[in-house]
Image (cartoon, rainbow, N blue to C red; front, side):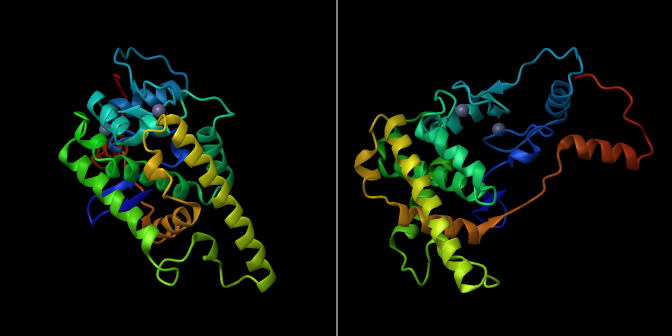
Length: 259
Ligand SMILES: [Zn+2]
Ligand SMILES: [Zn+2]
């Protein structure tokens, strides 16, 4: 899942929960390699290996994996340390936000990507957060400023140009069904925003409250529209698949693996 920044590089990306059991990709940069992938499959299917290196996990306990410590630290500094549900129990609003996103099924991607833009915008608007972080590189700072710009679009564009997400109703529905869908979608967005904004107030220890207070659920709904229009689903071939395909095309078998 990519939110395209240009024809080449995604501004945001998200691995779908549906293939996390099979594919181990870095939560920050999306990369994987053959050894990581083989180790992941061995762990998933309980196959013993002589692997000595351990995966790099989110230190807050959510289970997110990274390719390097640098990727992990950059991801935390880009906002994951505020969005991470690792330190929280099921009563925490951020936990409820993720649960709601999962329960919506079809809107999971939009809601999670939107939450990343919200925290990116908060961090970018309170400029001291980005300038003081030694973990962020120039590309990260550029991405954060683009998230600020996206949020500003969501706040200021007219409804005709950028309608709230709940008005994106399929034309196949009857009038009655459309009204029902809109009401239910609006409730979902209101609940999601309530959980997210309360959760961020808590997790940022009110550091960004002055900015957060100027955001509301209609802005959030327009951001969801923006993401719905711009997102792209892409299938990425893992390095393991590439390696196996190359071996197969050369008439060889993958008969020995050291991981
Ligand atoms: Zn990475
Ligand atoms: Zn985490």
